[in-house]
Amino acid sequence: MNRSALDLLSDDGIAGQFLKEPPFVRQVLEAQAKLRNALANPASNFGDLERIAVLTGDVPIGPGSREVPEGRWSNQPDGYMIRFYPSGYPTTKVDIFVPQGSPAVGKEFDPSMTVAVPGNTSRQRLLQSGRIQAQ
Image (cartoon, rainbow, N blue to C red; front, side, top):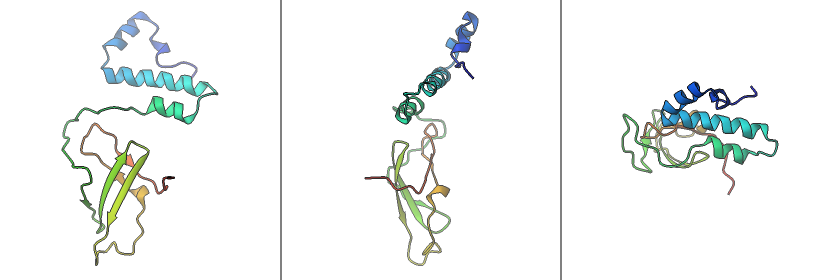
């Protein structure tokens, strides 16, 4: 537990194998090592850990992806429509429309039972929570 994944790569033969790994694997191992170092540092805060752990930037289009226009409504089997406006990973604006006469009328929506699934298969699915964002 005292060592990082990169510490294990000190042997030249292993380090050479590490360099042959796909860039994503190297990126994960490097992030793991940085996280361990940050967790061992009492001066680290959540923001420091977040900057290490959360990937940023453009994501390549994954296999099986499809173009989904922002703000597209999706029909739900429970009788309502929903759309998501993600803003990074920590915040998602959710709009819900319940048509008159729908079986969903009068029912409480539990966002923690919902996952926003992106059209790009390389992007992360976003689990929702009921926590209201501070303005």
